[in-house]
Length: 179
Ligand code: HEC
Ligand code: HEC
Ligand code: HEC
Ligand code: HEC
Ligand code: HEC
Image 1: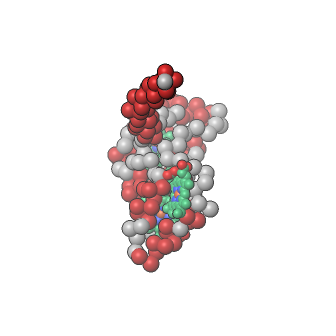
Image 2 (image 1 turned 180 degrees about the vertical axis):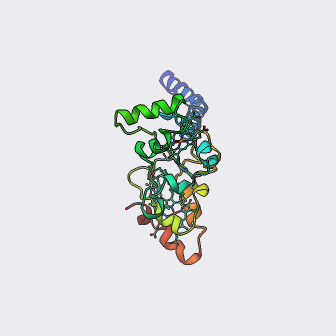
Image 3 (image 1 turned 60 degrees about the vertical axis):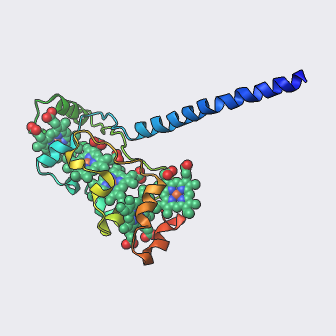
């Protein structure tokens, strides 16, 4: 009888833990979402806004986007071509100059990074006239780039299922995005 009672109170303790576990799980989910949506610190304080205000188009720097899977990030040489004369007094430009002098690539931190088991192509989306802002948000006004969303499977599919009916089967096929 005592054994039974102990076992029962043991269960009660476990039942009592459930709300605590739920709250913990929820916090972990919310925190990891907030971390995923935060703007990562970059090795150089690169401002998209400053460059857009200077009249530079997205494709001027991300020129691979219309013809390949990736959009591409410009090389240090590309930056230095302007910055050996523009804003040379700036501390950030001196950091940039340091990478150039050492002939080191800048270790930019990825803002959006899909897992390796997925396939994405910029080229197909740009040919279908989906624009950068639809997926990346108002980049031209960002002083520090942050992701619009976590780019999870539900987000990809929400747009794919919204395409003209004859295309949906192809766009919702697992093998389109998992090759
Ligand atoms: C002067 C060159 C330049 C221009 C113009 C430019 N970018 Fe960038 N872009 C960069 C650099 C450098 C990075 C890496 C640093 C960073 O993430 O802030 C970057 C990063 C990005 C990323 C994040 C990539 C990742 O890691 O996931 C996106 C998205 C992006 N740019 C979109 C745009 C869009 C949209 C425009 C036009 C509104 C644009 N860029 C204009 C240079 C540029
Ligand atoms: C349909 C949504 C979509 C559109 C439209 C789109 N992107 Fe992206 N972009 C992504 C996704 C998803 C990734 C992450 C890819 C990965 O991790 O494999 C990404 C990654 C990037 C990156 C970093 C990795 C790389 O490919 O070099 C840059 C830079 C970038 N995008 C710039 C742009 C620019 C500039 C445009 C417009 C010309 C654009 N993107 C349009 C979804 C999009
Ligand atoms: C076509 C010319 C051009 C290119 C290429 C270019 N920039 Fe710039 N950059 C500018 C202009 C113009 C400004 C604004 C200068 C100002 O506000 O005084 C600027 C501003 C900056 C600043 C802020 C300087 C400050 O402290 O005010 C940084 C940092 C910077 N650029 C980094 C980069 C990096 C990194 C690249 C390469 C990915 C790059 N730029 C490519 C023209 C360029
Ligand atoms: C805002 C809408 C939108 C979003 C978001 C989007 N796509 Fe697409 N996607 C399209 C359109 C439109 C096409 C081209 C349809 C056509 O063939 O005309 C396409 C085509 C594709 C194709 C080529 C399919 C084929 O077999 O031809 C792949 C792969 C793909 N998308 C992957 C992704 C992935 C992965 C994501 C999320 C990271 C994503 N897409 C997010 C609109 C979107
Ligand atoms: C439009 C593109 C797209 C299509 C279609 C798609 N997926 Fe995904 N899937 C993704 C992306 C992007 C991720 C990575 C982001 C995430 O985990 O949500 C992913 C992640 C996954 C994961 C891993 C989840 C994890 O926790 O790592 C599984 C399993 C998966 N997909 C299965 C499927 C199956 C099964 C289908 C077909 C019924 C399918 N996917 C169709 C884009 C797609």
